[in-house]
Image 1 (cartoon, rainbow over the protein chains, first blue to last red):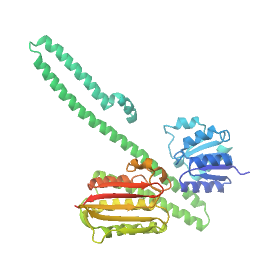
Image 2 (image 1 turned 180 degrees about the vertical axis):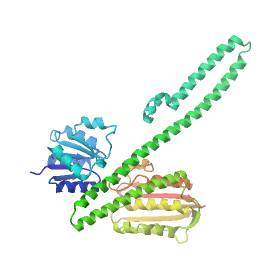
Image 3 (image 1 turned 45 degrees about the vertical axis):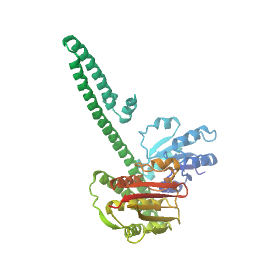
Image 4 (image 1 turned 135 degrees about the vertical axis):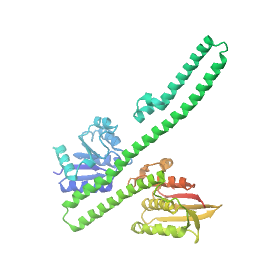
Length: 123
Length: 301
């Protein structure tokens, strides 16, 4: 069965490029532009992994993570943060405590490398 | 104990904070006065004279140190803003670079010419955005330094001036199927810096295009009233949320509903700086979901 990935990213171009690449690699991809829609999709689709940007409209990445973890249905879903905010953010401790599988800085990887990472996380 | 928090914010030890230095200075001066009091009482038959002298001198010193520490506080704040500016700038540059790299990855794998064309278009758009960001930064430093941009005033035929700017945006206007309405009388002249005015109006018009709804209208009005020049640029776009309105002219600020629109958060800040230079005023009216009108006034000469 195809693995499901929920990709929460507010930049339409990035969403399209990585989304397309993931689909080509055989994943089933769901996309959301903000935290609110992301939460709804997470509950409905029960993805195997969530790719999460931190700076999002309406509901930011951290609030999204909090609510995701509070909900019985979604609390165990793997989350990988994919952002341009460098690891040296003041909030990194808070994010790590909310339980993430990985923290990827977009500008450090090519599409290929990101897909590789995701495959590793899903093993 | 405000300086304790501030020292943290500026990443300096608390004893380097100007406010702390000033406080220390104050204590030192009280000590000098007490010391002078004791010494004068002991060794002078008429102690009031040296005491008054010492207190006048130390008061002057205190006032002087107040101004010096205030200047240093200002420099600290400016320095912090510069650092902040750089980190935001780095973040802003990263974004298009990531888009560029990822799109290029897809482009190199794609076989269909049709799809490749689309990626190619995306790449071009990204280059444009990066150029735009760098251009805005360059304009900003030029305005701040007063270099490169001619402040020299010339007689400007405003209607022709606007038509020329609109022509540069023709493609974007057509793409969004926008209607333009120019309500400017013929032979409306003002005496101003064309360089500055061009940046100002191009920014306002660009916003009116970018934030407009598809098929919306852009209206540009101008008139001369009470020996002042007035201009308004309106759109029928997404508007600015009420909570965000007071921040809209701040550097790098972007309203919460602007995510889908590309921008560096510098355009309106630049407008405000230009208006300041031209000794005019700028303001706006906006309703979320309905549209926004920016209006400014300038002296005629």
